[in-house]
Length: 371
Image (tube, one colour):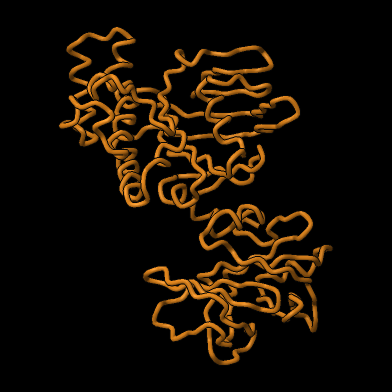
């Protein structure tokens, strides 16, 4: 296996920027996620690694070997890169059996018949599809087809695995099992995987690290935990998490040595960990708080916000409560044991340690773990 390094990668289509000056270092054996909404540039980045797209600028390295350099017109063909790709639609051949589909990359490379049979059976057993080897794709479920596509990639023993939303065609229940199986498989093989998805839950659950792209630009690279708890900016904070983070417009006010955010409908006192904000010039901010970091009370507690229950959504083991506060909606997550009805007036209490404050103009997080 090998590491992957991308330097100043840029790809344009006319005036449209697909990716702009993207820099990534993917470690040997890492399950690395490219995450973002449709059209953000994640698949373009993956295809540049695969050699299916030649970038306008930048370099791609596998370990110590440069395989793409736009400035020096260096470009290794896809078949020379020793990468395996798993596509969204699996791209398995309908007229071939499962055995033939898995064996195809080895047959193309003219491997010995005995070696092909041995490797196909080993991979099939590892993925739990040994009993399917004589079937045709039309006789398989979505999950089984997905494992066939993975087996065809694994049997080649490539340097890098590239996966373009391989679970998106599965139903919700099967996707949960497939995520777990993929994570187990990665742990067992120790391979380098670059994985594209728009599903933030999928990214958070399987990735070692995540790179979040938006409109062709790289927003943040970090572990799932750090991205969730210390989002770099408003886009990352809003994109990661379901329900999304609550965002409230406000103005910073300092009074008697204490710092407050004037939200219009209420003035919220910030804790001492925000004291560094007393020195900043910009006072227009956005206060962010995740739904699970809000508790509700029927009594007026100091530094709480009065709200009215607008919508109650039963999510199984929890309730998602939409509250109306003037023209704002604030979502809180609570247990189903809460005795609540639409129209109830209550008070919202924020967990101070979990509050985020963003600059309204730059959209940057003013307080992060690394600041």
